[in-house]
Image (tube, rainbow over all chains, first blue to last red; front, side, top):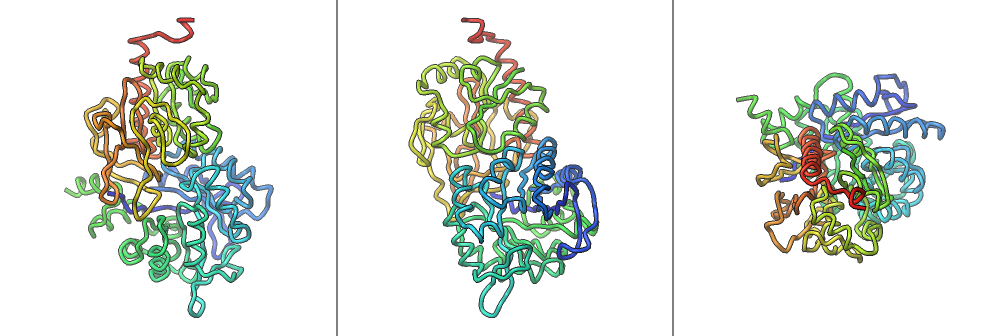
Length: 260
Length: 211
């Protein structure tokens, strides 16, 4: 059976992993290559780098980080944030990214998704959607959640898939950073309508939130960031709890044997 | 061990190259078939679409197929496995035809089949040292060998059991990505490099030495 995935997200700026609130007060928390390796060793199923560098000069730095990461990381790596046009996709994949995720650039130019899927295959095109509740719709936002659009997240997700996206990375802006759990209504609303895997993002505070994302949110994967970087828990601990609740994540057999 | 990593011109070859190098192989990335068949083995990576990759195959597929039939070591990953077959639903063009059969679209509710899935394995030295395999997949197509005995591994997705691996002489095709499957995946790559070395020792008939 296909195992629900636990994906670790690292914000990368100018070649370093940073942490902050709403892209402000960023502080350095380490080397992405080392941290990615550590999370693989803990049992992470995938790594996502979100490039939060503002400048275009940082693109070379990002490619270098991806290249160095791919030399030692043997789980899938998705890179987002650095893709502004179709021409940015090839170099990132060549450097060692398995998938690229696009958000604002896809809203500005939806053709980007089609071109990426045609050239490199749907499996490496992730549509990243940031959404927040606004009256009766899930409104999409771009530019790190700062700019509202006219798009409804469910309809936009369907269009992304039609255009060739192979996966949806769905972030609830309201929940992001709150650690009170994923937005299950939003996650289920999108997951029930699209035919590709949906990654729940925004709001992970403890293992039970991941369980709910899989069971009630119908997510194929759950993205975790802050609680790991702050040392509040580990991937191993999260997975151990999921296994106790009967969720067969990767590593279950080994952990069950260890528990005796 | 000198291995050719064939470049169809799209996607991520870097991590596969590094995984092979970590298993002590020397890797040459090439789009030149003459060169690819004159080393100690060939790796067909798993990125891109069937059509463009099939167009990157030699016009006359005969010599390549014969070379593999004679036992030239080869590892085909994902799309690389699919290229070992005759043809694909994904696009026009002919595969290598080493394994008779067709590549079919995966008819499931959620496609691509993306993530870590269980792999049932048959007795085969490519799986040496692996007790239980859970491997990373990212595929929308699956291979249907005419002769089910060609399969050496299976996975099940949404109730459908399909060939996760095939073997013909010293060619192995794997539908999942060993280079993305953490430790057990790296074990498989190490096993391939060892098996390729053994095959070359048993039959050191390189095209170069014959020419």
